[in-house]
Length: 116
Image 1 (tube, rainbow, N blue to C red):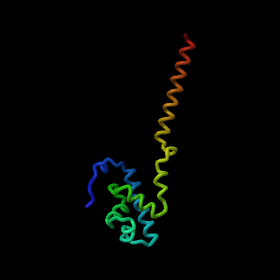
Image 2 (cartoon, rainbow, N blue to C red; image 1 turned 60 degrees about the horizontal axis):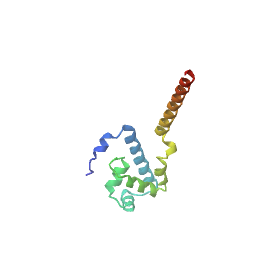
Image 3 (spheres, rainbow, N blue to C red; image 1 turned 135 degrees about the horizontal axis):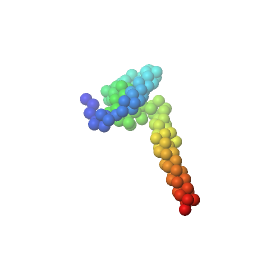
Image 4 (cartoon, one colour; image 1 turned 30 degrees about the vertical axis):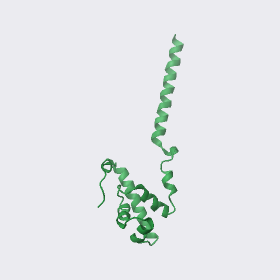
């Protein structure tokens, strides 16, 4: 029986859906390669139940299992690409806001110097 992790309770629906989609895509990749659950599990060094859980998008399955499945498909580099700094829109938005605030502060400082 899979162990329950408290962090899974905090998983946003969008993240859960993404994991489920990844699992479905991995299942499809296995089927297109005409591999059984058992042979895929043997090649991965995990239990058949683990592959089943991965393919169902169970967030409790270790990231290493997903990484191994992607590697078996020749797609392991995709994991590194997921969090590329240039794709981190949250950090970019924050940097832009800081730059805008600096610009406003400089404008206020410059206009107060002219008044004196």
